[in-house]
Structure formats: structure tokens, C-alpha cells
Image (tube, rainbow, N blue to C red; front, side, top):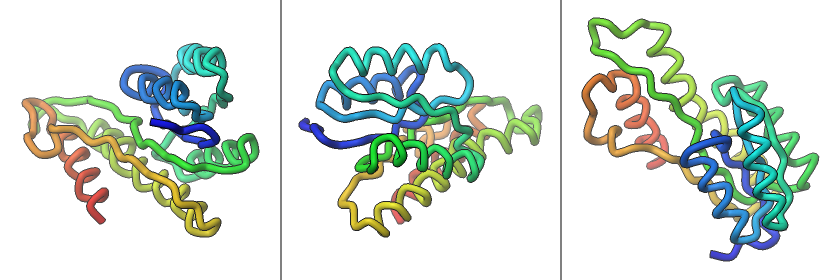
Length: 169
């Protein structure tokens, strides 16, 4: 994979799969917008690793479930890198429980981050790409749980099923 001269925003890039994607993209030459929500220190560690690979990195705190945060994230990336070629919607949370025990607030938060966040990020970056005739890529990370629900994944599994459906549009 060759990504020299490309710019990618990776949501949820401070740890786990997101940090792995960010580092692999940087190894391929891409500059990276490292999105995080809770842990700035971990995001800065990922950004430092990207810079050591010879690529630029921008750490961006944003709650992907809030349109103002998402629009701000996109604008910060554009202000720094002048373009966006790739969006990877990786941010996600798992908070579960059985239907009888699942709090409405947990349901709402999981849906907001895992599904609404994908929608908002696709919309914001998609508008930029269309307006600027960018032939870019948007990658939405779902889960096998979206097709084969898991025990106590009563918010997570439906949220990932929604990502699968949204991605098919």
C-alpha cells in the first residue's frame, strides 16, 4: 500500500485498532489526523510514533457523536493539511447488558458514538470531498456482531448492524 502525499483522519486512533490503522497508514506514507475523545496522552504517543516514521500527525480531540465536534475536527485537519483523502470511522464503544438491565443512557451513548458518529463523520468529510472533487476513500469499521449478535451486546450489536446498513448506501 502506498499512501505518500495522502491525508487520513482516523477516528478513535489513540488505542487499539485505530492506533494500528494510523501507524500502518503512516508506514505507507500518509499524514494522519489522530482523533481521540478521552485520552490525550495516548493520542500524543500515537502521533509521536507517526512523526518518527517521517509523517505529519495532528492530534484532534472530538466527540464523534456531536456535529460541532466533527465539523471542528474536519476543519482542523484541513487547516493543518490542506486536504483530506481518507476517512476511517473506527471510533466505537462497547457497553452492554441484557435487555432487562440495559439503561437507556447506555443505549443512547452506544448508538450516538457507534452509529451517529459514523454518519456525522461521513457527512462532514463527504461534503468536503464532493465540493472539492476529491477521489478519496471512506472506510467504516463495523463488527461481526452487526451480523451475528453477541451475548449482552444489546446496544453494541444493533449499532454495528446500523453501520453495515449505512455503509451499503
